[in-house]
Image 1 (tube, helix red, strand yellow):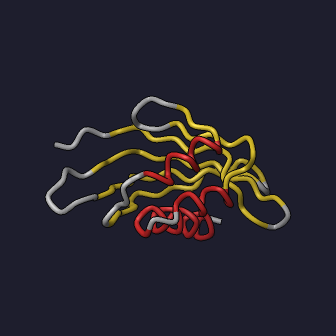
Image 2: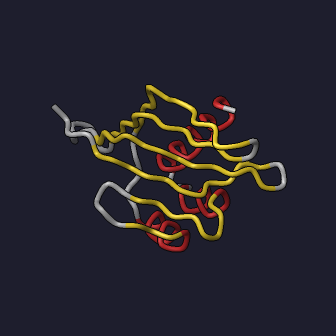
Image 3: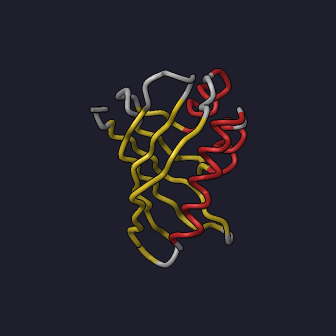
Length: 121
């Protein structure tokens, strides 16, 4: 289960790097899913898609310290430290990230994503 969800997290980050994030998250998020973002806003699925259509891409990213929290046979959360890098020389974005997934019709779907920023030292 950890490998499956970690692969989805990597696919999500990759989509944010290559400019296909709106399409990816439009497909993977449930209709009632939300994202609680580091800047203090809560976006529903439509707001996520709209915001990613105009968002600058990430140059690269890193996922570390990943952990799985099993909530049931078809529900789980993955928690990790994410680091994102935009333009060369720009400060890194570091946050503790949590993604809650549910399995529907054999596919994992994102229900809740949350970021807690970590101050860069």
